[in-house]
Image 1 (spheres, rainbow, N blue to C red):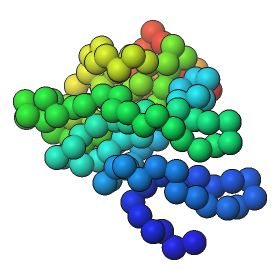
Image 2: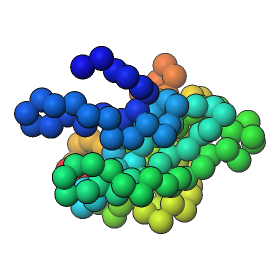
Image 3: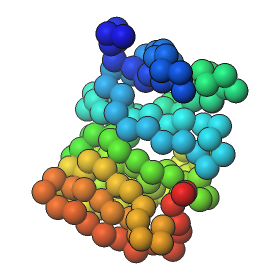
Image 4: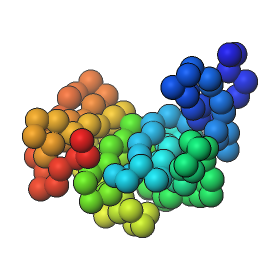
Length: 152
């Protein structure tokens, strides 16, 4: 199937490809909530640096797209980077590469804090026993021990 639009595509187990969200200009990272009922999508666009949340329907489609977190204020403060890769911990907190480093955002969309990297940050993942966050930031690979664990 030729890609008809920037968006989020779903591939069924049978190989069918469908466009399930196209309300973002530069969708990039995706992550599911621990119960897999919410899909988070980052928009890697400096003029609209947001993360969206969508309700995942039983048939695999998405509904109720909404801005989960808007990082415009962080960009205006001069924090470098755009929304990018992300992971979710067992409590449902989003660890999201974005302006200034790795933003930690609660399941309710509240910015809890930022792991400041000092440079544009592209991605993060949980490793080792799940309580280590690995972060790629420009030309560095960073490791941060946490008191939480990532989802398996």
